[in-house]
Amino acid sequence: RKEVEQDPGPFNVPEGATVAFNCTYSNSASQSFFWYRQDCRKEPKLLMSVYSSGNEDGRFTAQLNRASQYISLLIRDSKLSDSATYLCVPEGGGSQGNLIFGKGTKLSVKP
Amino acid sequence: NAGVTQTPKFRILKIGQSMTLQCTQDMNHNYMYWYRQDPGMGLKLIYYSVGAGITDKGEVPNGYNVSRSTTEDFPLRLELAAPSQTSVYFCASSSRVFGEQYFGPGTRLTVT
Image 1 (cartoon, each protein chain N blue to C red):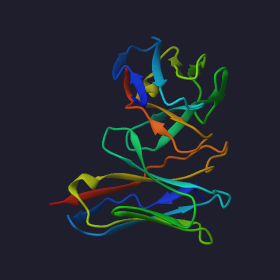
Image 2: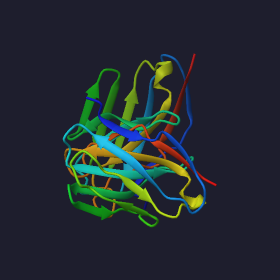
Image 3: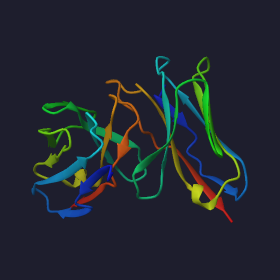
Image 4: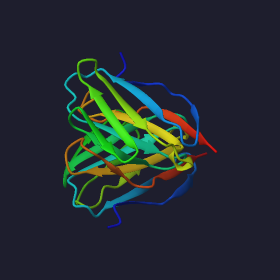
């Protein structure tokens, strides 16, 4: 099983839509999780950290289900500027305890 | 705070040339990392450092070297550049080992 599995998308949604990304992880010992966004040809930027069952920041909500080793990111009222690739990153996912940055899920918000 | 800065932004190398990619952070983070990202792929860890004078290999260290003489700087050295090293290189830092990482803007390297 891969350390992290995400639907690569692309998710094409209209402005104002609600969209959810799912992520499963293999390391049951992971305690913290991060959602990053990466714009085309740019560096990953930290969107949200998740330490307990979830986190909310404005239009963004992350939920964690440790029993199922599953984490989700919900974006409400999508904006054009939300178009990016979203990376689910469990802490300690790699063999050295390192973060694993996969290919992520691509979101395209259309007018 | 500038965060993490990287130079140069772009570079074209000929096969066999060498170069150093510079990375500096002003957040007083002990932990620093170098990644490469090939087109359409995720990031791969090249090297990391847990403090001045201490470095360790990541997943893909071959063809690269690092040093860490200060908390702020973590240069990446490419010796004998090869086309396979054509990639985007990102430097990152964190306050906890493998915790939330903050990235620099990247260096786009082409080896021809």
